[in-house]
Amino acid sequence: MTSDSPRIASDISGLTNVPPLSRLNFMSVSAAAAAGYTLAAGPVRAETIKTDTTGLDAGTAHVAVQGGEMPVYFARPAHIRNPPIILVAMEIFGLHEYIRDVTRRLAKLGAFAVAPDYYFRLGNLVSIREIGKLMPLVNTKPDGELIADLDATVRWAESQGGDKNRLGIIGFCRGGRTVWVYCASSSDVKAGVSFYGSLIDPTAQKSIWPKSPLELAPQMKAPVLGLYGAEDQGIPPAQVERMKAALAAAGKTAEFKEYPGAGHGFHADYRPSYNKDAAEDAWRQMAAWFKKWNVLA
Image (tube, rainbow, N blue to C red; front, side):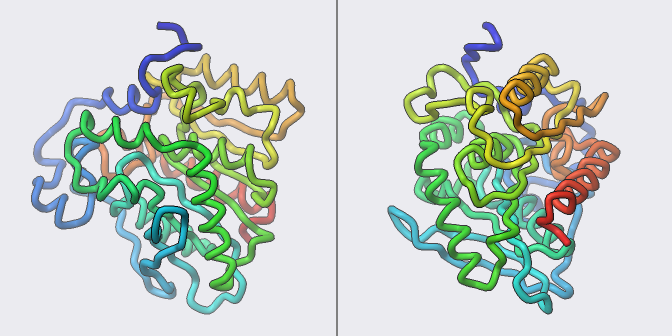
């Protein structure tokens, strides 16, 4: 298998490589499910980050899109008028507690953060516990529909008082790929941050994912910060270097940071792959990037 024609999605390859587990460090299945975490990604860490809603307006809403009403989770500062909009592009596991917490963390930074459940047409993905049953579903999501869902989310957030002129997007794993795709599509985005987003798609996906992030490099309309683990088995450093070169050749603005010792999913505090030092630094890098490009104040 070459890096140009992977047979499986590189983000999923990264999910399968995790450190040895200790039962004492993880929630029971029932506790993890009750807390709203996905179980398809494996055991859920007992010490997950929990962000409260003090000073925030947070909750769920529905956005009209083709095919129905798309659920979204949002969080925004309670007393800031016209806050910047930041889209939160989720992993393949649905709108579970980790993504909702990230949304609240962004709101604490001053953003109107919105996580759209753009897989809603496929059912409740959070309830699926086997990765083998999940993958065939999420791999049917066309990029065209994904972009339309994100556009609809932006329009909704603007109608609720968000500032479309300060629009950002952040994403993790498959959602990190979404960041690259959306930044190549939307002229409204001011900046994006991709956490270990896949860069080269499986050739079998060509009919619904016409171009991989690497192929989209010349079309990037917004500066993107790429945050990657040097030990990511699905997105090796050589792929990141190819993306850097493609963006530089196209004259596009992007920066990358790779974390030694960190693998895929290093920011996901609910998973065994969590790397505290890398995750905390990456969050600081993300905030600084959005401030640099005037998304965050």
